[in-house]
Image (cartoon, rainbow, N blue to C red; front, side, top):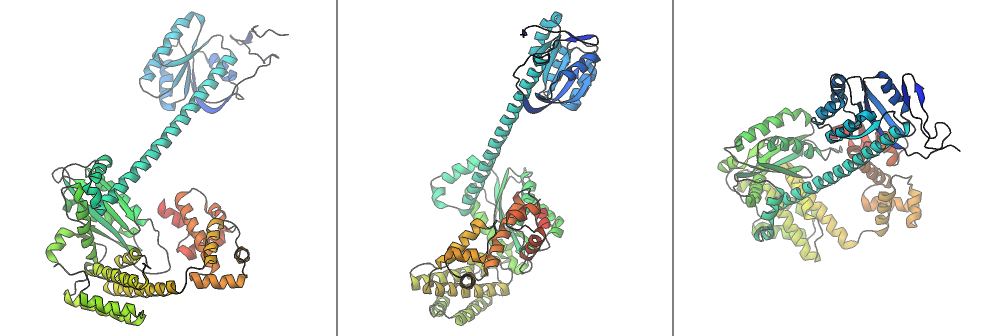
Length: 569
């Protein structure tokens, strides 16, 4: 039996080291570490450097030796260049001692771990190195097990440090996301002018909590995207986020505070500034104009209009600035899209107009809608819009509110007839706000009213067919799998032919078309938010043939998947 305390001296040239248990038949259980350490070895004797390299057990610890040095001065420059995790250094070296090296590097705050090599005669000297940042020391002759145990400990320490840093970073990111959401939610409240929250002082408290507002001016800018042509091509829906990101970076450098929120094709930007300390609103208008023009070549599918509201002196009056910015935006129907419109300039040039239906107009509209006559309703809308323009000297900017009021009256009429609201009024009001010409607004009103009447009639006759809801739900949950019409037919216990006919009748789409739409919707999300390749995304959404997927994507979206991804990169 071998005594594990017995030491063997093995000659390695002019050096001696003590072999470890297991090296000459002595078995031991050894702990390892999987984290890679970068290491620099420093000693004025080349043989010791080579010895340390040979003693490192790659089965127990992963080490990358990124540098070697034989004097302190050379070592210092090497450390600054490489930034290793660990430095193993001798104490006595020419030019600069190990202690001096540790002290000098520690002043650079690089977070480097030092291990000193010492003989027994330098033991006290080695211990003094600990106060300068060394974590441990190795006594000569260096034992292989001591060296590897120490490296394992350092590797585990680094692994734990990295894990903690990742956790802290994750928490910080979550806090940043939460803070961003709270800021944006508060901004929505400021824009909405919630009177109850204003009266209770809650909005004032929240705005001080989440924003760094200072005494000065507050202004709202609306950024509106208007597509230049209507087609089956679906334009990227996050274009407004990209544009607002550019504007906010510019404004934050020239304001106390700036923040934005987006909803579909509209961006809402609030900024707080002091004219004496920052550029004036007119100067801001100019550099936003220049920024818009410098990127205009990128906006081939749409026009961008910026509308500036009235300056206010209190955060609680941001809602008023928003309302005036909206009025300025409505002037694009008269002045054209792609401009910067300032409310304070426009209000001096344009007279105030009536934006609500007169009682006589309401009575005529009521009669048409009550009869549920599509033709009569279309003719009445044309008459009402023509009369409005004649009464307001051809100025159309008030038509937005006028047509929205018209749709609101229709909703009230239908409510009287059925006892419940049958339409989502917000959606139709949004359709109106997306119009940029009188002709398109009239057509939009007529189309909306035709759809509203059809919805009302259908709602009276029947409720949504239950099997269709089941089919839609199944597709949304299983779009990544092979889904056939036969499978769906078995699900709802009808024949494939019957299911196909009913699905088309109830949804206006074929079964295959709906499945493709769901898959393309998920593919767009993955292209924007993931690092998966196009082939991987194709498989995830249910296509094994990437060429077939690309053809369907182009047909659905209008551009190639890779081009869609580049737009958001």
